[in-house]
Image (tube, rainbow, N blue to C red; front, side, top):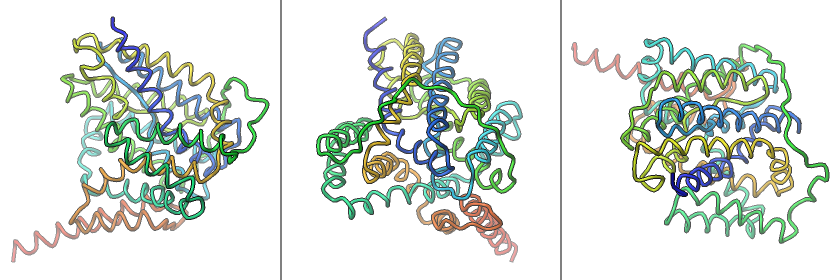
Length: 382
């Protein structure tokens, strides 16, 4: 047992929560969640993260570090016309599909065969609007936003994982120290869970539930498996998907969207800095679980602090937090017309038949890719 196991767990939890909480709040606002439902959403995500990490790390003796789908939260935040009840129905569908991917091998392999450029372009189309919002906010509040962008660019040269956390802490200091924040609510209390009745709306299931599942698998679970393999572990993929999918189903009733493997947080916990002996790094899991149980208890108060901040600061933190994911997504889409089509349709915000742009972007990209493949076959026959 080393102190580095504890510090790695604490740092990973702070980075994971601090760098994405603004995006979760934006997602909750987009679907009309009230204060109690938003608090329940965040607390449920933290409880699911704690349960998945603790159970799987102890059971398999490897450092399984869970998180929530940050790109999935961005997808929800970019949606419109979906109620919190319809959103919960979509979250249940996404969790059920993750469980199916665990237990039905052909289904899991089918998801893995979705072309990487198309999945990456759909993700980029979701994220690009948040990154653009950083510079739109800079026009409204340059004295607040531009210094934070500068801090982000400098800190990431030394440690990319801490860059957004540094922006958040400095932003808090500027907002409260400079009188830019609203007064804090006087009734900040411990978190509670609120049951939210799901509603099954076909347009929400297709336009949000299915893209949420695809984004979670492509941008969270698959990279999470890659981090574990790069550290020399053989992750039990089916049990991990089953447990995270079941956790997502349970917590969906309390407002939480999908839970999954972490990537950046996992990188903090799976390397030699955590423990020189790979066989003992699994002990980070229980401490990571404890961190998220504490965060879950006080998430309502933390949300109250975030809610008091100026909206330009919230958009800046969210956009900078997603900039790395956007960079990775764009690196997969170069020189491929179907990927560009997917990106532009998704980013356009197009809504047809009540179904959002993420679904239509994926459909357009797959259609263009299919036509390209058909044309190539015809040319070969000719």
